[in-house]
Structure formats: C-alpha cells, structure tokens
Image (cartoon, rainbow, N blue to C red; front, side, top):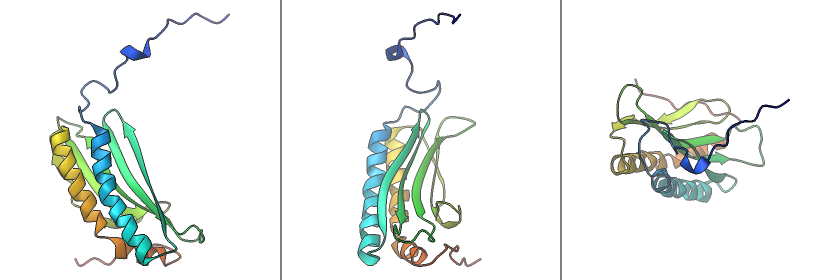
Length: 159
C-alpha cells in the first residue's frame, strides 16, 4: 500500500536556498552573453569551420554562463568552453567570479582570468562578470589556433 504524501504547493516554495544571493541572474547572463557573442563572431569570421553556441547552468546560489566552440566536421578536436562562473562565497556574504577558456572534454585550461570577489548583488555581479567576459572575448586567436589542431595544448606561459 502506498502512503499518502502531503500536497506541496510549489508556488510557496522558495526559489533559492536560504542565504543565497538575491541576484537577477537573467540580467547578468545576458550581459555575459553579449560579450561572448562578440567573441563568437570574431572566431567564426577568422575560422569559418568553427561553430559556437551559448549556454547557461543556474542554481539558486549561482550561475555558469558560457559559450562552446567546436569544429563539427572534426570530432578529433576537443571543443572549447569560454565561461564565467558566479558562486556564493562559502564563508560569508559575497560572490566569487571565475572565468576561463578550457577544453570541454580534456579540461585543459588555455586561458584563465584573475578571479574576483564582489558583493552578492546584481549591481556588483553585473559589471564584474561582464568585464571578465570581455577579457575572454580577447581570446579569439587562442580559440582559432586550438580548433585548428587535433588536440588543445595549453598556451605557453611566461613564468
């Protein structure tokens, strides 16, 4: 015999966990995607075989706004992901925002922006995320070179 479960009214359910930032992720995602769309246009103009598509993953406490790049006719080339990740700080109020360009399957990081920590508000997350996305938008040549090879080696660093 199946027990009768109480009815849950989802209209009263919270949209985010307690303590999660109150941020308009749609607005932040749109700003990040505008910058990444410029990157996609430049990549597709310089490397006509390359294709790109936008994406996002959200949770109550965060957003990962990204764009993938691939050569659909060559499955031996690791697709790339240019993304900006917004996460609540584990020990207090605020957000940690990281952005990088990496191989989708390999996880090899080709470019990494310096992370930022900002207040957990739309007013703080929006310009910080947009700035990181614009920094990634300067990586069209790195994407083109990586997509022209059967694998995506990391870029040389000067340390």
